[in-house]
Image 1 (cartoon, rainbow, N blue to C red):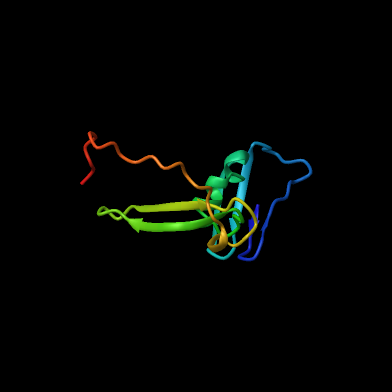
Image 2: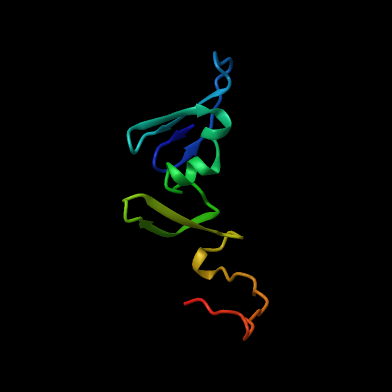
Length: 105
């Protein structure tokens, strides 16, 4: 796969020596990711390593760092092709907390 900052292109070699090995070249960050073909082509790699730049149905919802400095990212799914700001999620059934249940503090 070839990520050039504008597009993500998949291509296959006509007769690869190791067909189970996949390579992702990230041109804009000057790096390569090498692994199994299904893993390199996975959505997890697009979100985690390419920061969702080419994932058209996902939008970064939140990104934070833990007190130990680890990165935690939350992604929101775009259920259709409209911009995420105009997407209204389906209404959830109203399910209030019963009076006898302890309330979170």
